[in-house]
Length: 112
Length: 116
Image (cartoon, rainbow over all chains, first blue to last red; front, side, top):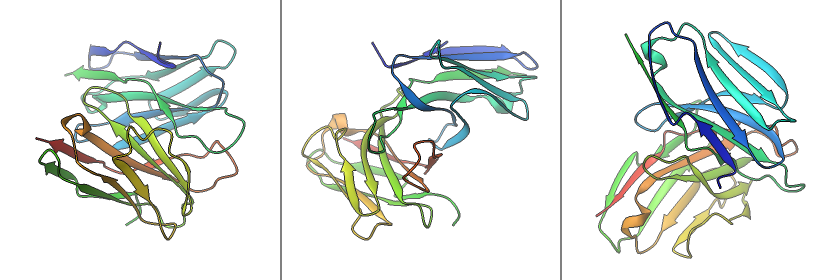
């Protein structure tokens, strides 16, 4: 079983819809990242969370440490939001600086 | 430039050929990470540098993979005797500090390697 699971794997919605992407993890973490990847490979960091909730524009990210679960929400979705959204965690290993462990991503398509 | 840059952006290699992929991190960033992303998958950790020291290479898939960062800035990922299963996007990321594990990582555009 993967340490980071995302759902759904694919999501197609109409412009204006409220979007939710979920991430569950099974390890102790020090931080969780939400990343956006457009075709061509470039990755942009959207949020880094260790507790609570963050908001940036139409994007909202929440995390529940006890339940080991995070959600990414997009309000008033737009075709330019179409991308792959990736959840990644930094595991709490107690020493060193480990790389991120990634989910497989959610492929989002927003249709006009 | 202000961001992480990688070169080349695309590389086609014949099976058995050696390749070298370059990463220029953000100036002053201490930490540098290499990741491998197979088609349709999330990235997977390969190796990590703190300045010039390679502190973690647990993700390197075989001894054909070698990474270096001799002066603590630019890093090179070398793959010897490439195989078809090495075809992937290789991502480089850097972050500013080492003390806190809550540092944001900044990603480069990646190098797409295709092995024929």
